[in-house]
Image (tube, rainbow, N blue to C red; front, side):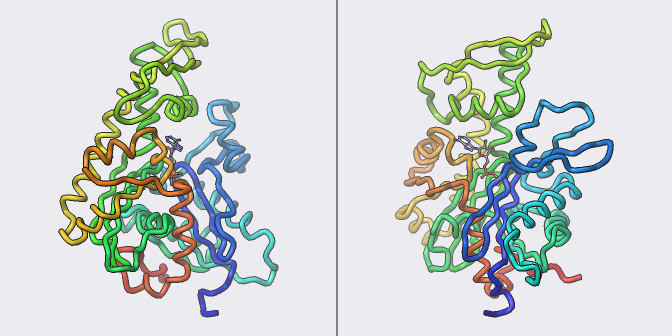
Length: 346
Ligand SMILES: Nc1ncnc2c1ncn2[C@@H]1O[C@H](COP(=O)(O)OP(=O)(O)OP(=O)(O)O)[C@@H](O)[C@H]1O
């Protein structure tokens, strides 16, 4: 095994909504929400991941529940580093105490600035990595979805996460063209919160909004008869209240977000060289990320682009699998600055 061949190396999908850890030779061993609960009086971490997520909107005032990532990038540096440290420790809890620190392949949005990328690398090292290697998220997603990224053929991936939607055309181990917008699942949840507040004077939390999205949300046309009972706080009386909402109003509330995603897919296709466009016409577009599961999103993208569209198996795991598998190709990435950059040199 070479310098990077130690089996405790990790791939991390540091996402706005979820953080996943891939342990080399094992696979994805950890999937947790990117959420941290902190005691604001002492600065101590009270809970991380699922335990912290369950506290959202339910904490006493000395506990603050933080989502340290926003729009695919670090919004709260120290909390992100603490969260990653916790996850790296958990992922490696069975290794020998003599083992050296792991190398970590960590995904970053393709539209990230140098400063934002630097923050991810530094936070990963602060969290316990020996070296941190950034990899462009859509490239990792494509590897994780099993696309033939190394072949001389065009692959197209659309990764709809919590904070960002990334669209990329890949061929011969590199990104040919890509677009990243800071519009994805979180924006859908916001749109639902706004709609319910405007339409019903009802205040709902982000977890309720997400549940509404799962249950009755969608792209294109809704199942007209589908309804859902929701609870929130009436803004006029200040009291809890239950109302019934319909799928079609939620689909309408999500339309702007869905349109932005579709527009980005179309713009990317317009910039695609003809040979690669022909490959994609034949092989189709692959959707990854949790947002790929939004009802009918695949159908709407297919109708709008006239391309076949498929949802990857395990769309939520693709980026993590891609970061993990790409640990084998570190040497390649060093010569491909558009899919990944070098480790940070101090
Ligand atoms: N069945 C579903 N229908 C609609 N949206 C879903 C579904 N399941 C998950 N999602 C959404 O997918 C998003 C999370 O996806 P994912 O874990 O791929 O994002 P992430 O990697 O954390 O974010 P990013 O890539 O932007 O940093 C959330 O907004 C979540 O609500």
